[in-house]
Image 1 (cartoon, one colour):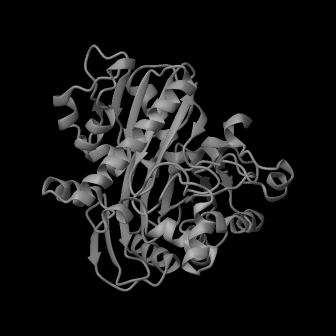
Image 2 (tube, one colour; image 1 turned 30 degrees about the horizontal axis):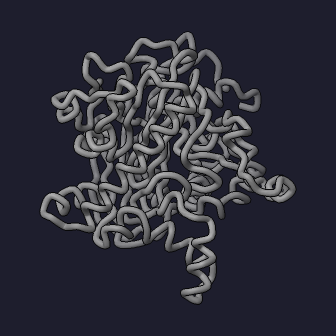
Length: 414
């Protein structure tokens, strides 16, 4: 690690199934680590594998918007790096490190980890458990390594790491333990970067010691999950062995009868892999509504009287309520419920429906506060509520950058 430094520039890369988001941060060294971040550039590549489009902006005013075919996430990464070079952000002493969000780290990775060949092999070995996300991340890693060489260290920041603290009673499935051990079958949990961010941010804005807080963090977007957090540690979470378990999502079914995939495979005359694809890409809000996975579209359609859209929204909110109730029991009460994610941050109507009629345990929204909290941080519960409710916009890129800096600072290999 370079010595005597007061700041570090980190490129944070977040690959979705058909998107790549990035930000470049300058993190300034503080007594307890890296903080006081400054954002130097950011961008989004969309519709990867199709017609493609990107939108890049730098702090100094450079920008680029263009529609162009993007073959895969490796190609998208090349485009990002080429643009950063054109903005002089890849010059000598420019980018010090790259942090990559990796969705599934299996049982091996419980913290951010410096990437080498062995780590890449381990990530590849569990990629079939998160096929929509691990493979894109790997393509981005390989493209960055080819473009920048070994001089620029890269760090994998795992979505599963935050949930490595689950107790055995929450992490185990009730199956034969010889099979579970042989195949490393357990509940891993996902969205850990987001749940950790909401936890740490809540502690800061509520002036509540993180080691004493009991929280239910609710990440609602195209993918959705809920986590019970006690003393800053995840003790239960809705996603499990793969990101398919748990809440109803944009295109994913969430919880269902385990015998259903086999039943559908036999009745439809298809392989189990095809049924798994249906459950991941044809279910959830899209499957129930028959029209869209986008909550904004469904709320509008429901308002116009579309019965399938009404049912999709009702089912979505009902399942979130069930998990909140379950985690109140797990935690023996909670200090706060925290909403994040695209839906959680921007859909007051959905939050209101989820939290309706929960006065019995002291959760009560303030209607005016809730309606005004769109894409902004704030308390949305009433003053007399015993369980507070917050909206906290999640900044995964910042968390990826900070975790990357922490990993490199503590790693003797750098």
